[in-house]
Length: 224
Image 1 (cartoon, rainbow, N blue to C red):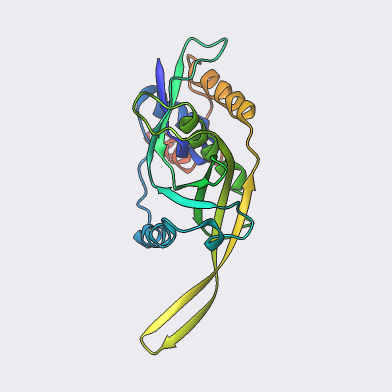
Image 2: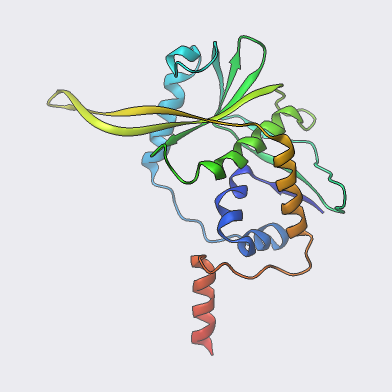
């Protein structure tokens, strides 16, 4: 079996409920989708357009010199084959933004609207590493940007409002950059863990914190 792994699945779905992750990847049964409020897509699109083609110093002073060139591009990796596994996998998804630095290297970053002290930053590291791996080990015909020298998150956190006139209100956001240490060995070790789970003949136990699994348990209880 060759599993398609989306970077977003390796964050909240995998950590939230390994049973739901297993059922989705092995049996192609997904959790019911929950619509994301359109305002977040609107904010993201405005940020992409604002920074596209700009120099790095216009985004954050701690970035090396370069140009923000790539936004919202699809990537696909070569098949990942790891020792001890009969199954393989590959990465497929769409990153937020890649920066081309003047030294010939690239940086993979995500734009986030929220608190920079979010507990989810560690989970987003998996997502960034997945994009990085796909860019450095692309499938035939897929986007190839290498080497990747930096990974990170840009948090845009509204802190105050300003008003130029009676018909125009602006939300002013603090911009915080959180760099993620690149660790390819650690990422492949995580993929090894994922493949071990997927190769199991049985689905793991449901997470006690998974709302969908709780719902199924309650429905089954009522049936009885």
